[in-house]
Length: 402
Image (cartoon, rainbow, N blue to C red; front, side):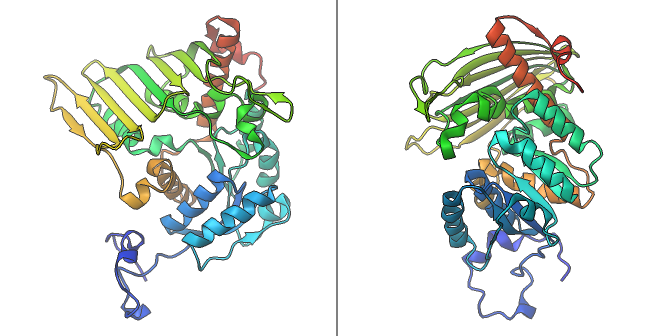
């Protein structure tokens, strides 16, 4: 049945009794056509989020999963079943089987960061569409290797830098880059204050050799946003940071944690735009803030969850334009089912646009090149912290083979 642009049934059919209707009488309540089948590689916290969002978005289904950790599979199969009781997932014995299943159209790779390159090497043999979670790799060398594998790839190869689809950032992109509400952008400031890294299988995110380090693992999202807003390549990076509070005495299998829990990063772009990033990972909240200053106004947006009982909006966006044009204050958000589906709705729209990419439509999803440059900025910041010097991006890249 061809569907129009009416409200999708996914978001409200569960609130109404529909059993009395025959299938031929269902139009608004008719389920959308599942046009594609996906496999999830790495079925931990993010793998489950991708699986559930795929089913919520409603244009594709998850056929099966692969993960080397049996506990993750068993636990998340039960959770998935509680949300999607009529969907049985295939559990593949090997990565090769999961990648090469002829019934599957696309692979969603969300295994631990340090496994990405080896998994991508197997995944590209399939020719299937690929959604690779951020960060695309843990080092610039590995990111370059993945970039080369993707260079002539005939399928979609999308990087999971989905923060650009959070409501506050999506609206900021529209106001700044499309509407030019603040004129020519000059300054970018991004803040993330949050609780420490959460627990993972084998605690891989507490060690730089497995995660790539804090600035690569977590902050690549923000460097991607900075690069996107600046619309230019970075010219130089200066940073400071250390391990001030978190995991200072944490050991796992005799290894000592070595990740940063705070940083200040300044990036100067080739077009003159200046950007700064402020990270604190020992704050009792999840708080993100974006401030953009142009020659005709200022935009400020934030997202806040502080666990306090006061009822107040979790998001905020303001555009102050002075005498140039009308100013505005808003609360960007998505329908509740989407907003609470993962990363404040960003994963849902990442999936929606992944399917748009498969269908050949134009989107602003993160490309492999975007993923690479987010890692370049993070790695340059790490080098600046270790040396105490400003890092020239041109000189920094001379160390790598592109």
